[in-house]
Amino acid sequence: MYDIEFTQTALQDLRYFRKYEQNIVLDAIQTQLTYEPTLETENRFRRDPPEISEWELRIGKYRVLYNADSTVMIVRIERIGSKPNNTLSFQGQPWLGSPRRRNP
Image 1 (cartoon, rainbow, N blue to C red):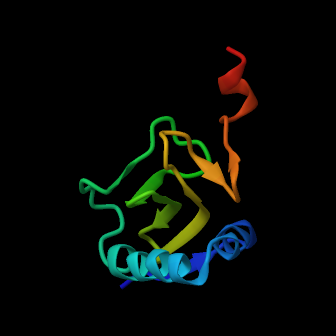
Image 2: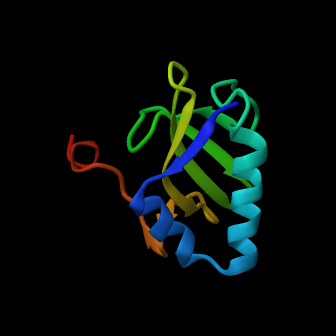
Image 3: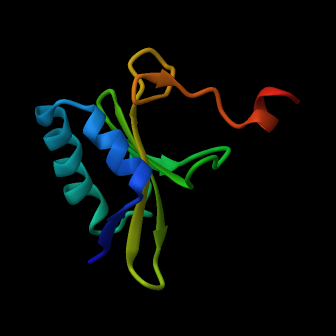
């Protein structure tokens, strides 16, 4: 079983959501990421390119970006956001990607 750790940024992201939304996200993290977090499924997949994190968990309109270390059995939640209209947002602000990605 994997332990779940949250970065400070991910905790701030989580606090942005309403309590019932937080519960949806936390329940999915517990269900989906404590066992086999690196097994790809329809809603759990590798990010390409792997900016912020290597993995993404899709929970309806919510997104959990995470890294998994199988040697120490830890899942580190990097960011929690939403993607309602095909634009990933954190704390209500659209994320445009890294500067090197925006300016080829």
